[in-house]
Image (cartoon, rainbow over all chains, first blue to last red; front, top):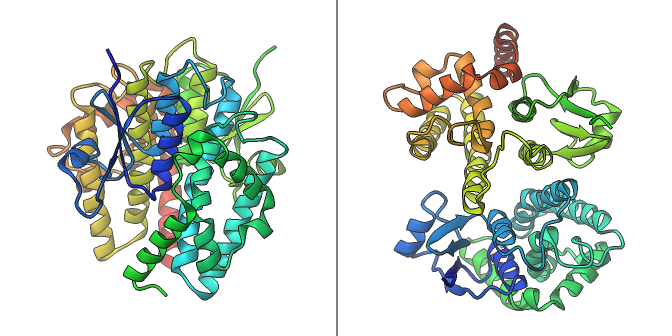
Length: 219
Length: 219
């Protein structure tokens, strides 16, 4: 029986991008469905009644919500090629730790940078750079966080590279000058088809963020 | 070679309790080391430099931080008995989803309920009870979220209920007739040896909580 895989998503969502990358890495055919978050479809509300958020991975009619849980599920089901998590339990726990760290920090700090001003913004910028520097340390001399291939942490983190232009323009935060290793890592990731196919153009994301800012009345 | 397992903990931490329950269920011998959070040990700072928080599980000199990541690690390594997560990938994703829900919603709301007064407290109470309804549905007729035995979601959730139980909040906070399944689940859990071994001594706990309350009121 063929697998039916659907992804309910929203094109600028970094969380959606994670699942797209994982599906593409594994060579899984899937149907991408754009959700209008201001007008949520009945299917969407039925598939994620708890959080009512995207992304939602639907595999043979069964929903899996929360991006990192979906990525882990994908890795477990389609386990014949391109492992996303290490096989060693300790390495696996470390990959989960750093993906969790990205989850706890990057989104909120990034949003704060382009929605706040003055001291609050400066504080958020400082913390953001500290977080990226920790990731740089973790990366070390490796090509990817996953080693020679894309792994769980790469997938968790790389979607946020689509925010760098917005961070620079709205937050006067030049990631390249502060964390050059992160930029070169992100560039390496984008060379991979699974990433380049899954990430929208940074300029489009920038315009989207500019629009959100305008609509929420933040200067 | 024997395993050396150390848990850096704080006796009344619900997060530490999760890891203790997992270790007890698996029958793992471990050393529980009490940390003074106002005077963090060099070992804690070395083993959890990122968050500087407890609990930290140290297995043969290697640290695993974040309670649910540690619980998953324990399940991965000591995989010959008492599985904490289901073997089926879909069931596993659902267990992770609900544990994540407990982590990101319930604990946060419970803290808000604890720390606020008046309208804010009332709002937190309402939110908490909404979450409980969902969990009541999830539990269904099973003795535990994990089925016949304690599983990942039970471990994530039960420390919070031990708090409620000890503080006799059930009567006012959670009415038995509205949440019969959750209440009987909580009673069942507290009677479970592995849970009661991991919970702080009742009198000491009550005294400490009332002291914290007094201190909070003084601020």
